[in-house]
Image (cartoon, rainbow, N blue to C red):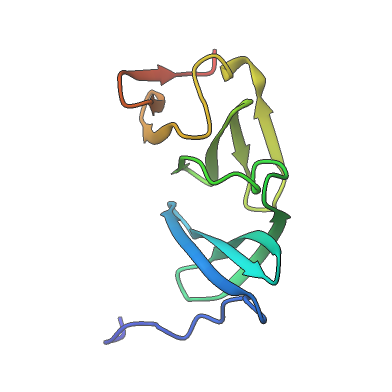
Length: 135
C-alpha cells in the first residue's frame, strides 16, 4: 500500500568484500545468498529477508563447507529452499535446519539448475531435464 521501493535492508557484510550475490524468491521470504571475501578467507552467507525488509536469520559457512559452502543451483518451493550439491539435493527450512536427500545424488550435482514445479523439483544439467519427486 506504500509508494516507492524499500531499499533499506541492512545486509550483514561487516568488513567483507562482496564477490557475488544471488537471490531466490519464495512464497513468504527472499533467500539472499552472498559470496564474500575477508582477507584470504571466503565466506558464504544466507540471509532470510521478509517482505517488509526485516532480516530474520543469517547463516554462514566457509566456502566448501556443507550446502551453504557450495555455489550451486537453487530454487524455492513453499517455505523451503532447495540447493543442488554434489551429494544430492538439500532442503533448507526457514529456521536454518536442513535435510539432505542423498538418494538424489545420481541425478544432481552442484552445477545443476533447479526449478520448482507443482509435481516436484526440476533438475537440468544442460543436456536433459529431470523431475524429482518424493514418494
